[in-house]
Length: 88
Picture 1 (cartoon, rainbow, N blue to C red):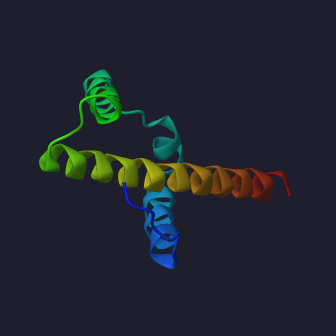
Picture 2: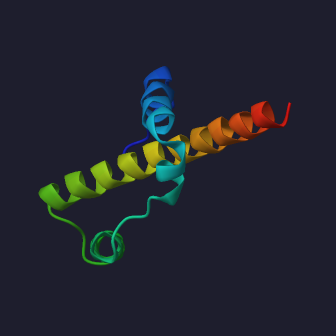
Picture 3: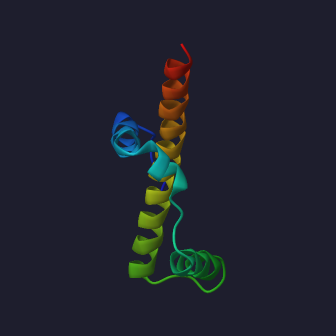
């Protein structure tokens, strides 16, 4: 995957995802099938190489993972803020 600059759009997308359902975002995990597919792509990338379509698929998966990590961090922040507001 080519290097990307972490820019404002990444955070805006992650915030949009997290704001709608922070608990749901934190509970989300990819399916076993998706995990297996990604593991296979990563393994083949390191050994035999990937086709251009597979490279694109892996790049997209890595971008989505990046956005979900940002969204989960933001969701934790939302829930933490919510909890503090209730305690006051």
